[in-house]
Length: 186
Image 1: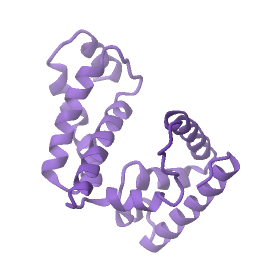
Image 2 (image 1 turned 120 degrees about the vertical axis):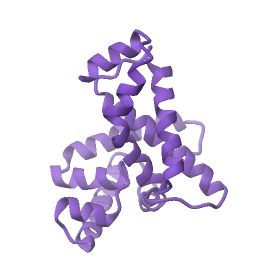
Image 3 (image 1 turned 180 degrees about the vertical axis):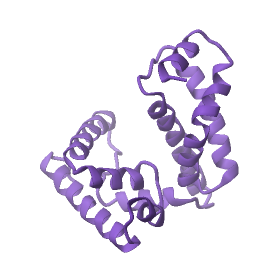
């Protein structure tokens, strides 16, 4: 079923769309949650919460690409769960490691202008990603959006794990330089 048909059914408040969404995007959303959390039960719960959040969000939102919309919801719910786990000292999956790697590049938003700075940072990062060669952009997204392990990325891109690690290091270094040029100081 096409995304626009599913979205239209959300707008019509057709409850059967939830099952169709689960069938079409359940595996995709579960993979995102599992890569971040590393726990089957927590991942299942985040995916279930994704369907509820999608139901509550449409209307008023009308996403053009439902997979990205659902993936973002799942990712945000998983990151929230990961923060809860970290606060409780319970650990997590690849998500914690991926976030730790990015901390040297991304400033911690803790001042009153947080929302404006986050928006500017997002625009700057999007420009950075658009300027990257396709393979580098895909590597970056696989690690820092989907939180795939280095081994999984290596298998997907037919690269050795050490090569993936070195490539990601170089991309993060480029990101840091890009952000500094844009006036985002760490």
